[in-house]
Image 1 (cartoon, rainbow, N blue to C red):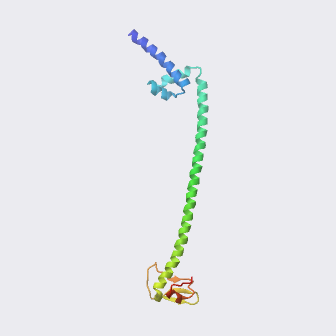
Image 2 (cartoon, rainbow, N blue to C red; image 1 turned 180 degrees about the vertical axis):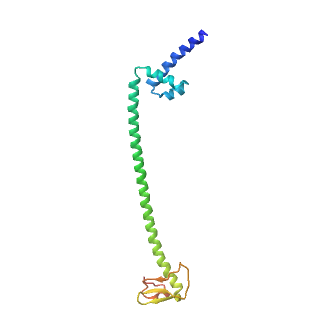
Image 3 (tube, helix red, strand yellow; image 1 turned 180 degrees about the horizontal axis):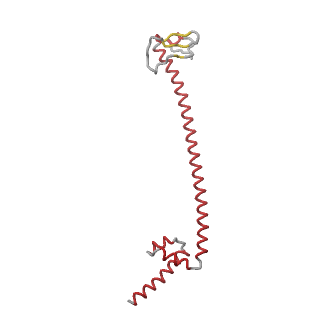
Length: 165
């Protein structure tokens, strides 16, 4: 039994030296040292706190962590600004696309209304006061047929393919 106790004490001395080396020279955290050496955390903290270099190392690590935190905040802010800028650009592109589509659809609607009146000329009456074609009252249609087609200068031109709008 005495031989086993002596081995344990020598292992303990070697473990202490290894803990001190890993903490002060390799700058590992106590959690990492604990996993690496398979030693409990309270034992590690007890050993490193007894060393005279502990307070200086603790302050150095605190300063390093502050610098890392500043850097991380700066990177986070830059990434956030970049993401907001990209979202704003995508939104502007979407607005431009919507405006272009609205222009196209507006134009297309006018041409479709005129095409419809060309096919259904007998269903429309000419209003001389406004120069519009109005759908006759007795005709019932769906919502997609224009009830009024504006700015027709000469309704007789609709029979031919020349239309003045």
